[in-house]
Structure formats: structure tokens, C-alpha cells
Image 1: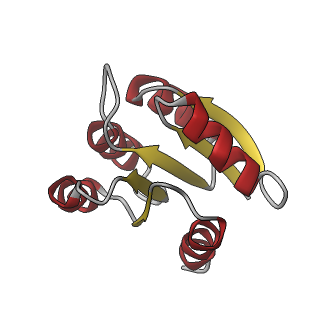
Image 2: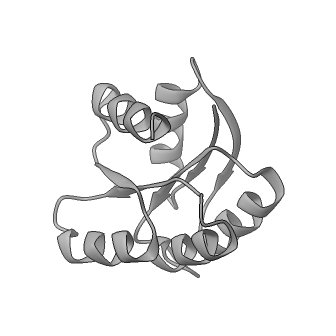
Length: 118
């Protein structure tokens, strides 16, 4: 499965890459929503892991742009537990699901497999 990782934190991108790269192809990494939309357009990944709070363009805006461009896009939001209100906005923007930070390998893979099975 081709995966795009988007997070403004290099540490979080590294953590997600370590969890995913064994079984999945990481097609790109973005630091903000603008890069995420561009990379999505270029790479057409099967799934996008998208941080909510980022500079330049946040994950909610980027998710909306991606799902407008491709209604079948699969986006998983990466959130801190205190971002419940933003999660609602993310779902409205087209996100399929979410994982919470700090990432746990089991929950990341569980969410990925559940969305991939849809």
C-alpha cells in the first residue's frame, strides 16, 4: 500500500515511517498541508496520514482539498487527544478515521487495515 505521511514534526514523521515502512511503501513525507496536497496530486497514494495542526495550511484544509480532488481519497488524521473539536471538522472535510499521538504501532496498523478493507 502506498502511504503519504504529513506532519510538521520530523520526529513524528520518523515514528510513523518506522511503523509503516516494513509492510507499506512510503511515497512521500510532507511538513505542511500545502506539501501534502502537492504530493497527493503527484503520487496518488492509497492512504494519507495527516497531522491536524501544522503551519501554512492545516490538516483539515489539506484534507478538504485532497478529498475535493479525489473523492475516494483515504485520509487518517493524526491528533492529540485534546483536539476533539478539530476531529469533527476533519471528518466533515472527508477524513476516514484518526490515530492519536503518541503513536502506538498496534493502533496505527489497526486503523490502516480497517480503512484499507473498506
